[in-house]
View 1 (cartoon, rainbow, N blue to C red):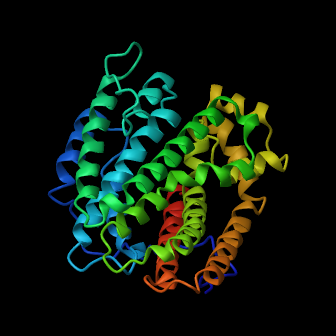
View 2: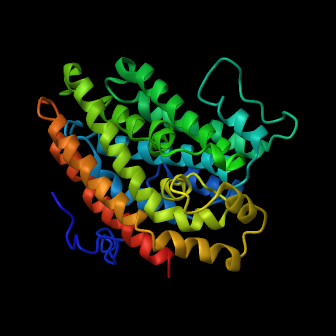
Length: 333
């Protein structure tokens, strides 16, 4: 499968989801979104509404009839969960609060909102959000079978945030190889797949290895789209964890010292020449081509799956990628 207008793939102006009916969050998600607005407020409601619109595109075909809303709500809550901790790490650089937030899903030591230097509002909200997410996950008929896997995959997502926090402090640490090892888990595709199969009576555990291979490619595809959609805004915010920026670093197009200077003084006059240099380098186009390679490689890997439609799952990322590129175009205006 190839994207239309392949000769100018970055010039996507039509968002496939822009003509969808006006969406509202479900009765399950709405109270948490309202609490987020009141107590956190780092993002506006459009972040959750966009994911709310695109989620059905990559839902596994084996999800039980009647479980769609539960699956959908769990994934929206999971998106909110990783976004809160990611913003604490990258937007705020709040290491003390980050350390507490990383404890929320686990029982070794309870996250403490009263700990010195910790923003208790974030920790209290995140505990409420995690409880709501677990309630939705455990309502799935096969939740007990896959909960250990779900917790493992959430742990990998939290590690990806920790890696991004390290990059924020030490830009010279960045390498594309490590981004593809750690950073891609921030997209939550593995926990999303766990939510699906916890609600899929027809899923055959013998297909689990194939599923995770396919999801690994989908996760990289989703991350590439996210990098392309957000790198300019993140660069201006002092966040250098995008693959676009890291490739510019590794190629010598920009230097760690230059990024440190931008972090200290992120004015439009300082950031604009760096953005223009990266735009003109062809790095973005190379990532579009990499997305295509991931897609084709994933198709080759999915032939043995019988209890879910791997091709349909992968094809669901194409309109999402178009939406991400369209969002990139708007952010660059």
